[in-house]
Image (cartoon, rainbow, N blue to C red):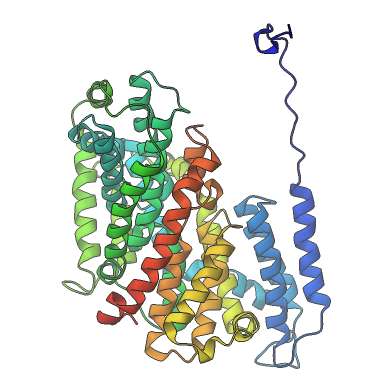
Length: 503
């Protein structure tokens, strides 16, 4: 009889093969792309500065897609490249002279003066305040304690938590970080491991809901601020918080309903009822204790801030950025604020995010102002004859391009920095006129489609790191959500967005 190898005593585990570090290769590839674009002759009609800006964009895209270096390090490299390459290029206003590194450095750092950067910084402070007080966790626990113990009800609860937190926590990663551990605690209470079907169902639901509401709210994600920054700077229009909500919230509401049915049908959990789930949540709520004075102050501040955001340009003249920065000043004020000291806040703020954001805006602005974005738009989209197509067909084709290129980007903020200038330039090529802002905004909604892969968004990677699901599990939900989201984009473009004047 053949020996049953499955019953052999386990020997020493084979040493795990260390994955080769390909990041130096990716960085070399980035510089190679930069050099190749630089040595190519400048296209006719494109200024030398525009040509060199495109070379820097090629470098940036490869670095961002491969994560050859961290995003803040890439920002420092891009600043250096702009200062050197554009500084040694002829000045567009005075072609007989070089721009000079001082002038080029001013362009490289120009993004820091954009009001959208201040809004992102303010949003990060609010997210840090939520984490410092654990208020976001208390809110999530309270909602989940009310939905019951049935698996389907907890799925609904996970979606509702993600929606409500989106209004008060302007950071997708912070929202996911609040909800995912709670859901895994409920799974553990039932005696199931992190890699169970139940864990996959709940955790994927939570992070997909986070991505959906990145679209629904202007303050939901940093990439929205990138788009706002470019629209204000280059198109001369502002989009109020309430206007964004009017445009995008109906889309996100429908997608939230779709998410529930997709998840319930595609991932079957081991149980229909989590008997010990309520006890776990109540225990964690008990450990948090009664509302503390600092939490009450943060609740009052958050509600007032939300009301001011929602009534921007309706009941008062204060823009979103201004009221957010005033809120940050209050949070930092001794005795009446949230943080006990600057050092407490300083440690909790990802300063690199602010730098990357500002440099991304600077690079995009340079591409637009030097003609590089317009040339690239003409080359990429002009060849397919978009100018002869109806607007709906244009939206359909550009959205597919947008979804496909997102497969290579782990950061929607970087993707916005790369693509929004090109889409703004495309509106000139297509002569969209009053429909230009609507077209760019719709493509920004598509940029937030982080549904397909764990690497498509930071909150996905945070959840993937728990081991609750596989890439295949995520794709199970991601493919139908992406397809349905794409169809909804077209339906809304043909109906609702046209009716309310966005298109």
